[in-house]
Amino acid sequence: MNAFKNGGHGHGHGQLSESKEDLINLERRHKKKLTNSTTCFTKLKRLEAGLARARAKMRKSVKNSSQTSDPDYTPQGPMYWNANAFHRSYLEMEKLFNVFIYEEGEPPLFHNGPCKSIYSMEGNFINLMEIEPRFRTRDPEKAHVFLLPFSVAMMVKFMYEPDSRDASFIKHIVLDYVDLISTKYPFWNRSLGSDHFMLSCHDWGPLASSYSPYLLKNSIRALCNANTSEGFNPSKDVSIPEINLLTGETKGFLGGPSPSRRPILAFFAGGLHGPIRPILLNQWKTKNGDKLNEMQIYEYLPKTISYQNMMKKSRFCICPSGYEVASPRIVEALYSGCVPVLVSDHYVAPFSDVLNWKAFSVVISVNEIPDLKMILKGISRRQYIRMQRRGVQVRRHFEVNSPPKRFDVFYMILHSVWLRRLNVRVRDQ
Image (tube, rainbow, N blue to C red; front, side, top):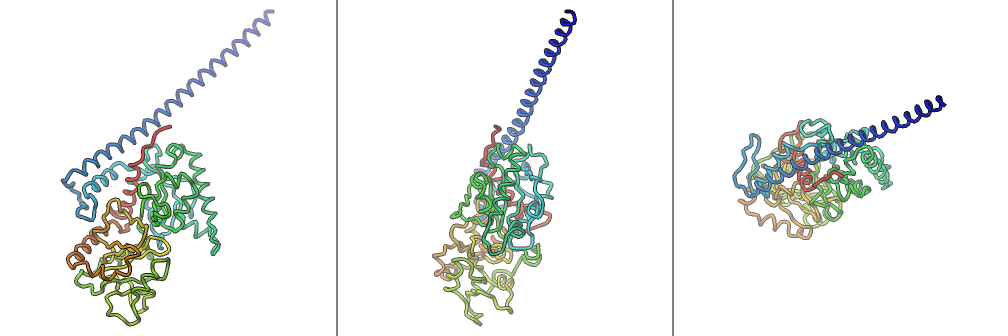
């Protein structure tokens, strides 16, 4: 009896103690979860509040005519849609912007990219982003955007079977990576990818994003192939310049003679890639030995003639699209002081949310190719000189530097991503 009472009492007390402990532990875990949730929410709310203040300052600068001084460069002139607004936005970016790079993934497909090819901006940006401490944060709670550090160009280089036209390997890599980071971290699911971005200069960059619905519809896609007829959305996507860095640097490519020392009206040399170039060459191709023609248009440049020297001797450099809308000739023209002539349909030029391309380049449609010479001859000497000088001034936005320099192409790409992030409101779920 006593034993029963004692045993029963002891057993009952043990059950009660375990139940209390379970309840207490459960309550503690619940409070901790709420605290963590509140902390995350507070951090996110703080990030969004900072972006809201930046937006307010930018709206104010649109109406403000006074120029903010800058020790390195002060944007001004008709090359910018609104120089004051751009400058204020740029300064706010430098002050606030944080980028988190997912560390998952191994080189060469991740955290790597080509730096000495027509796809050089892919590797250049990823590599600089990895080592640039100014914008990179190791704390994802402090990040405004999240970089998916895969390289489509490297996928194609190491995984593609020549002549197969089979891109399914890209699909598997992209989907597996999105699944990995969305399972391991809460950030992709929190915004459905709208504060994440990818960057690609390969022709298959848009294709890579199409395999993931949220990556295609919501995420910021920084692409060289900025073709609106293939789904490029200027309000959320970023057009980046295609830069063919064969040596990995721009040394020797920058600069050229003054406008008065450029005897050639227009120059182009390139293969019959895509639907536009055959129209250009059929209409304007230079005959062999005709070096006196104002329009120096070649399919294959004679070996005795230097491509770079021809650009530096020309007033206008023709930049038609090839198989894809982007052309490295646009940046090559700006580097050499030649006024670019953009010939394309459905192409969104790089940084066109900031830059007014018609102030320093000639933009024509494919239908206007037969009138090309008349259009160029119709530009007065005075207007040409203005355009040429403006092109020299905005060239800094397309220059590649390591380490990066303020207002160069690395900073301009980041600024374009920053602008797209300002359009997004992320809420804690």
